[in-house]
Image (tube, rainbow over all chains, first blue to last red; front, side, top):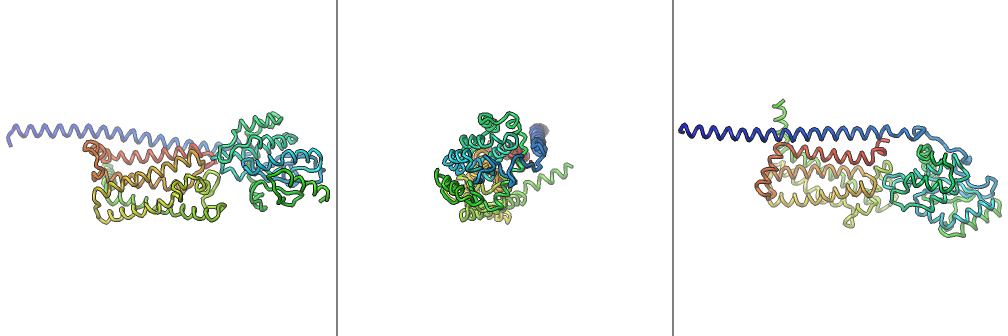
Length: 254
Length: 206
């Protein structure tokens, strides 16, 4: 190999090494940026998870079971005169389409019976359809609002119940927003003080307990209607049968 | 340290590691598909059946299984996993045993698996954006499908099975040697985790 050739090949090797070094630097740079992104993502995940874990404080009462005031002895939300001879107990979920149809068919009739002093209504809002509101827990939020009204402004519970049904969201959607629920309550005449307390979510544990208790006691779906403690087996989606059953119970005095 | 790094580098690019990861991930996928298929049959027999992973309103296989997206082709999607994953397991085991498949075979495997990956991510997106519930077994499928795809792509680029133009192939092979694929996969999986935590964190940790 001549001297010239040797020099040339040394030059070529040098050039190659320079290219390799440059590529190495570029790759190290990319690796460093990648490492930074990974560290950032890990930090963000940790931060969000930590926030989520500690963010539960706003449930005033810190997840403790607080029962609304003004409930019946059996723990339901009462509507109407306590002395009325017939008790109509309704286990319901504000997300449940069947409950909406029940209310459409019988809401006015129940209202009339309550006003006439023939019947009193006991509401048990449950939250088993939470899973159908895309993680927005509409059933729990609506039931908590209802419990808050029962607690602070009980004479508006019945009007608020109707308002929630008149504006019932479709099952499978995120449901009404907290603001929409609050607006409905205000329109239904619920006091400012009660509406402002919705966001405290004080009664969510109570709703969860009512739900559990309902299923433990054999409720299989909503609406589940009992007249003086006896499960009503008639057609609940048509006005008439329920009214007749209530009036019959009033006459027989059972 | 340099010695350790270069040892790790050598292991990561060895057939045993790559096909081992592929085998492990595809077995996980198969297990998850099997559980989901059994759940789908259970739910078909009794739509109110409580599934083991119905933990709360967000972590709920039942909610996801009941959505139309879970029977995209008219039967439970999990059946596709039962069909496809054993093939991947076979490929991984054969390659661990030293078999070399023809180029067209590996290329076809890449194409079919890419379609499967697309389906897995479409489902992930649907469960995040529209169904509003997560099922742990589906998430396991998302992650393990990603890992199988990453290893299969790694092999196919390394062995030039993808009929890519020479310059593109050289660039991708260079990126593999620099472990950029590892970085991309880690970033990708962390991004998914972040998305899940941001959307459902208050219910997962609350």
